[in-house]
Structures are given as C-alpha cells and as structure tokens.
Amino acid sequence: MSDDTTIVLPFPHQRSPHHSLAARHHRDWLDRHRALAAVADETAYGHWEVAELAALSYPAAGPEDLGLAADLLGFFFLFDDQFDSELGRRPTEVSRICDRLTEIVHGALPQGTSDVERAFADLWRRSTSGMPARWRARAAANWEWYFASHPAEAGGRRGGRIPDRESYLMLRRGTAAMETIFDMVERLGGFTVPPSVLHHPLLRRIRQLAADIPSFSNDVRSYPLEAPRGDVYNLVLIVQRERGCPAEEACAVVLGEAQVMVDTYAGLLARLPDACAELELDDEQLGIAQRYTDGISAWLAGYLLWERRTGRYRTG
Image (cartoon, rainbow, N blue to C red; front, side, top):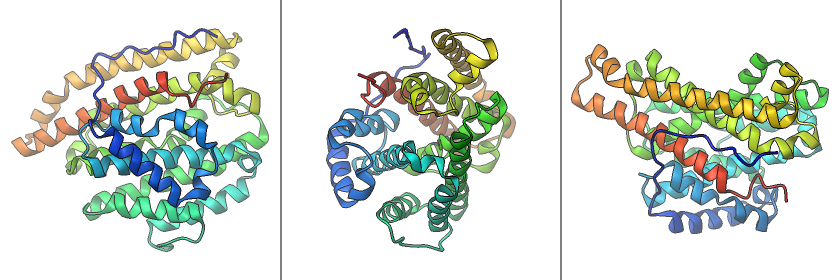
C-alpha cells in the first residue's frame, strides 16, 4: 500500500508550548486508572504520543486544560481499543458497559464502580467545571451518542457484513466522538457559542466536514490493522465493494474524497463573515464565532499532522 496518504490543508498547524507538562500530567492520570491503561501495552502507548495530539489539537489551551485534553483523548483511544478483542463482538455486554457510562453524564451514577467508570467520571467532572447548563446538556447528549454507537458497531462486527455508505457514515459520526471534541474547543477556550451561531447551517456544515475528514483519513491509516481482525466499519472496505477495486485504489479514492471535503471546508470558512453579518452579531459574538472556527481548524490541522507521525497505526 502506498505511503502517500497526505491531505493538504490551506492553513498551518499550531502547537502548544505546554506539551511536556501535559505529558507528565497524563502519565500520572494513567497511573491512577491502571485498568483503563492496561488495554494497551505501555511501551506501545508511549509511541502514540497522546499528549502531542493534545498540544497540536488545542494549541491555545493552558497547562491544566491541556492535561485535561490529553486525558480525554487517551480515554477515547483506550476505551475504543477494548472492543478490538472478542468483547467487541458481544453487543449485549458492550451495551451494558456503555449504558453505565451514559448514566454518569445524566447524574445517575456519579462516581462509578469500575476503574473505567471512575476515569470517565473524573473526565466528566473536570470537563463540565464552570460550564453553563446549556453546554452541559449538549455535552451530555453528545457523550450519549458516542457511547450508544458502540453496541451497533459490535453487532456489525459480529455479523461481519460490510455496511452501505449511508449506514457507515451514520454510525461513524457517533463512534468518532467529534461533536465532543468540538465541545471541548469551547470548554478549553473558556467561551460558549451562541445558539444562533452554533446551529447556523454554515457552522453545521463546517462541523460536519471537520468531523468527516479525519474519519476518512483514519480509515485509510487503520485499514491494515482493522481488515485482518474483521472490522467492517471502514470506508476503504465499502469503496472496495462499490468499485470492485483493490485496497490501494480504494485508499486513494477515500483520500481523494477527503481532499475535496477540505477544499469545501476552506470555502465555507471564507463565508463566515457574511453569515455573521446576516445574524447581526455584536463584536463579542463575532469574536466567539471566529475563535470557535479557529479552534475547529486547529483540531483538524493538528490531528492530521499527528496521524501521519504517531506510532498508533504502524503495523511493523
């Protein structure tokens, strides 16, 4: 398979100067939640450079907040990876695990009993600290979407049937947790986006593209790992079936689609001032809208750079 898997962005990445502090904090956090961390080999996990991803994705975050970002990203990786085992083919058991975590965001299970539950309860408490009720409600709904998507993914693995593209996108947008990633742009930036801006069609399209682009790229990166173990929710497999083509060609198609989305994304960003003018935003609201889209762009640039460098998706 070709190594030419670079998506070209029209804006540069940035990097937080607090990476080292965040890395130390994240190691301490993993030590406190050893059962969660045990999903991955310690040496291999070190090569994933999770704190580096946080530093690239949230470059404006302060030291403490960057530590929170690293813990959050580490949780996503480690939580998802537990389902790479036989557990990931047992939807009933996956549902039980995910339902209990969903209870935490709704206040029914404030502390949790397992180490995974305690780790997530800690993340939820720190993430919601100081945020208004409207943001917390949205964040809870997005976490519920993320957790509730895993049983369906487990059912797909068990059945072994490659989904159609529409079904794939529907599920992938849940398991990718991008809306939660974007919620953290506000949390780490210390602001909340006005509802009229957040739900404006332009902003919704910007968010959707910024969510789908990394998923497409990630499917290409992770295909050599996922295909041998029978994972069916991967766009490379879907394109292979659609076109009757080999994997290398399918990878090129997926990356080409991602590049088209990047170009569309850049065009939408250029229309942001017009959308803000239509909404008659004041100076403060205008500044928030710009910070929010800047934060999403920083995530996109940072993630794609990290993905090219990380050891997480290496097969040899």
